[in-house]
Length: 604
Ligand code: M6R
Image (cartoon, rainbow, N blue to C red):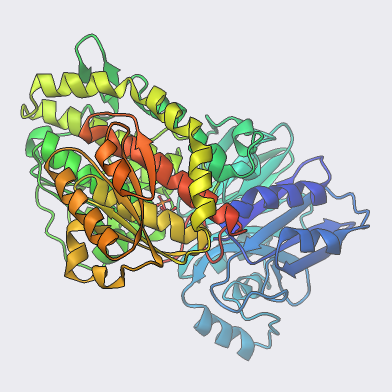
C-alpha cells in the first residue's frame, strides 16, 4: 500500500527522501514522487514505476533544501501514472501533500471545487484535499477546516510554501508516526522509513494533527485543542531493515525463525513451575470467557486456524475462525465471547473494521500483533506481541511463526487457568518447546536440498498442498506462499476432501506437496499418496525423518525432525516457506515485492 515520508531538519532532503522511499518499497507501490521547497519555490517530481525512475528524473539536480515530502502510491482511484502519483498540489503550487487512505466523499467535493473554478490535474481522490486547502486563513486554520469536510480514511503529510520548514501530519484510520531526531523530524506511515536516523517516535492517534518544524512539534485534535504526546522508543534495531548478506528479505526472515521463536517465548514460561506466564493477560476474566472468535486475514488467518485447534484441544474452548473481511459484514453473536484479532502489521483495514464491529457488539478484544503501537493494539483490551521484529518481505514468514507460537502459549495458559489441561501434557509440551530452535536450525541447514526440488519443478504451473488436522491450515499457508511470490497456481486442501472433487485434476502435470503427520491421520495420508501415485501425479512429502515408508513412495522427501504432533506445524512450515522462496527464485520473480501485493493492506 502507499507509503508516506516527510522531513524537516538539516540534512539534504532529496537523498534522504529517496532513501526513505526505498525503505517503504516493501509495502508495494506502482509510482512514487517527492516535493521540496527550494528557495521558496515548490518543486514536484512524480514518476510511474519504481523509485529508480524517480531517481533518474532527479539526477543532476543540485538542490540543497532540507525540507520535503515523498510518497509511494498503490493505485486506488486512477490508473498508475505520472500524473496520478503523489504529491498533489493546489492550483497556485503553494501547497503539496501526500495521502494514504481513501477519501470516500471525494466526488461531491470535487464537483463543488470544479463549480468554484478549481482545475484538476489528476484522477485521484487525494487532489481534492490540496484544493480544499486553498483559501483564507493560516495553514493550520485551513487544514482544520479541510479535515472537517473529509470522509473516509486518511494519513496526510502536507507542506505550505508560506511556512518553510513546517510539516503538518494528519491521521484518521491510517497510520502516521512522527520520528523525533536531534533538530530534525520525520513524518511517516512506517517506522522503517526513518529507523536509521532515530528510534524515538510519537505514535499519532486517530483524529490528531501534528505541526512540526526544526525546533519541535505540537499535536492537536481536529478541533484545534492541544494534546500532550510523548515519544516512545522503538525496540527495533536499524540493522533489521538490512538484508544482512541474504539475497532477499524473505530468505533472511525465514532464517530468523529460530530466534523469533525464542524471543516470543522469552519471559513467558516459568520453567520452575512448568507453566506459561502471560503477564499481559493479568486482568483477563478467564471464567466469563465461554467462546472465542478469531478474526484475521491471509497468513494471519491460517495462524488463527491453528490457534483454533490449540485452543479447543488445550483450553477446551469452542472457537470460530473468520476471515475479517467476511466477519465485518455479519451480525455476529458475541455474548461471552473473547475476540482474538491476529495481524502482523496491526494496520489491516478489514481486521480493524472486524474489531470495531466486535467492540460495538460488546466483545472484549485480545490482539496478537507484531507492530508496537499499531492501530490494532490501540483498540484492543489486551495485546500479545509476537516479537518477530521488523518483517519487510511482503510474504509473511517469521510473523506467522510468531503468531502460531503465541497462540500455542495462550492455549496452554488458558488451559491451565480453566483447569482443563493435564499438568503432564503441559509439562511435556513445554519441555519439547525448548528443543524446537535446534530442530528449526536443522531444517534450515537442509535448504539446498529444497532448492534442488524447486529446480526440478519450477516450470510446473499447478500445485496441491494436502494436509489433515494441524497440517491442514499449514497446507493453506504453503499454497498461499507459493502463489503470492512465484505466481504458480496452488491450492491448499484438507486431504480428506481430495476425493470429493479436486482429485479430478490429479495427473502427470500436477505436483502435490503432501504434509504427513503422525497417528491415525498418517494412515489416511498414505492413502492419499497412493491415490495420487495411481494417477501419475508428482509427490513431494514433508514428514518425520523416521518415516521411511512415506519416503519410499514419493518423488521427493523433505525430512522433519521428530516432535510432538502439536508442535509439528512450527517445524513443517519452514520447508514450505523455503520451497516457495526457491520456486520464485528459479522463476525469476520479484520475491520481496510480488506483483499486485502490498505488505499491509490498509484499504478494504
Ligand atoms: O498485517 P496482517 O497480518 O494483518 O496481514 C494480513 C495479510 O494481508 C497477510 O498475511 C498476507 O496474506 C501476506 N501477504 C501473506 O504472506
